[in-house]
Amino acid sequence: MSVEMPKKTVGKTGNRVVAAVCLAFFTGMIGMAYAAVPLYKMFCQATGYGGTTQRVERQYAGRVLDREVTVRFDANIAGVPWEFQPVQRSMTMKIGQTVQAHYQATNKFNRPVTGRATFNVQPELAGPYFNKVECFCFTDTTLKPGETLDMPVLFYVDPDIVNVPELKDIKTITLSYTMFPVEKNKPVASSEPAKGKSKTVSDTEGNLGG
Image (tube, rainbow, N blue to C red):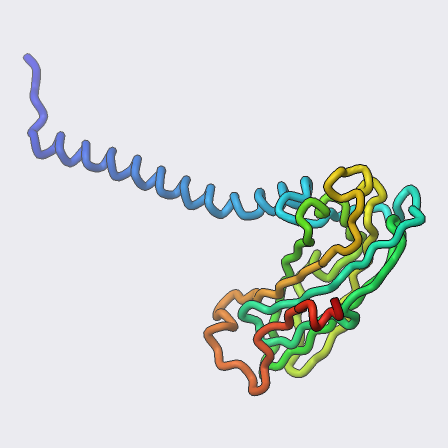
C-alpha cells in the first residue's frame, strides 16, 4: 500500500529545489563577473589587445635600431583627488633603446588616498611592442595629504615593431595613464575634493607641441 505525500509538502520541496538552483546559478554568475576582470586584464597584458602594453623581465631589447620614435605622455584622473601629470610631455629615442620617463602625483585631499593606474598606448597595434620593465602602474600608490611623489616608468619599444606592415613607418606612440581611486570603505569620488583640484590632465596636440 503506497502512501501519497501531501500536495503542500511536495510543493514546498519543489520550491526549495528551484530556489537552491537559482541561488547557485546567481552565485556562479557573480563569481564569473568578478573573475572576468582580472582574466581580461591578464589577456590584454599578454597579447597587447586594446593597446595594452607588455610587461617584461629583461631590461633591454636584443638590438637597437638606427631609427627614432617619439613617445608622448598623457595623464588623466578618474575620481581620485590628485594632481597627476607627466614631468616631460614627450621624448624621442632609438627603437630598442631603454629609457626612463617620469610622472608626478600630488594628493590634494585632506587624508591619505590610494590610487591605481591603468594604461594603454596609441596606436593600439603598437601595444604588444611597447615593453615596460618598471612602472608605478604595477602596484597601488598611497599618498598622504599634500604629498608629492615621483613615479618613474622604464620602457623600450621592441625593434620587431618595424616588421608590422601597419607600423613599419611609425613615428609617434602615445602612452596614456588614467589614475583611479582604491577605496575599501568609501569612494573618494563621493567625498568633497580639496579646493583647486584638477579634474584631468590631458594632452592635446597644442599641449604636446604637435
